[in-house]
Image (cartoon, rainbow, N blue to C red; front, top):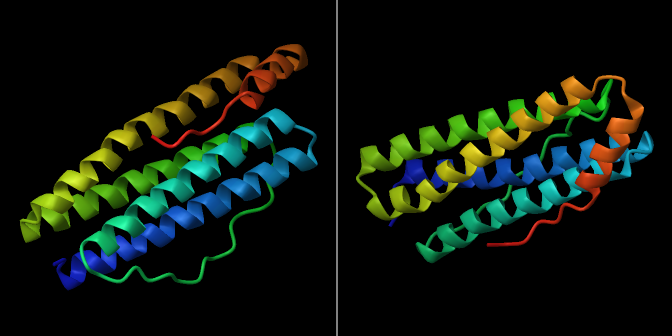
Amino acid sequence: MLSKDLLKALNEQMNHEYFAAHAYMAMAAYCDKESYEGFANFYIEQAKEERYHGKKIYDYINDRGEHAVFDTLKAPKVEFSSILETFKDGLDQERDVTKRFYNLSELAHKDKDYATISFLNWFLDEQVEEESTFETHIDYLTRIGDDCNTLYLYEKELAARSFDEE
């Protein structure tokens, strides 16, 4: 049985994962509006991954005999000045998620809930990859700058991205 505080925090994180998916879809919509279909695909696939994360938490809550509770999602940011800004915002979002998982882990350790600690370790490992991915894209986009030909090739690469559940 999960403690009341840990259950509340897991439900909040589940909802936050769905919000992250919502935010990435807003970034995809911006990219599509600007005719950057490859970048839009990157964010659509990223949204799929965030929904997968939310479902993992949903399943865990239910597997522990508790009730997953959905809440209202706030509206995400929808206006961006550039593709680079979307990636910077994505990195900020992923860093926030990392902090949230650290806080969840601290709560699980305080409760000595070893099953939840084990469950959360997967997410902590995943966040290293998530932050690194966005940092790399920011580095590449910064280097590319206004080089339209290189940006076109980079976008084609991102158009091929697809998320597969592990």
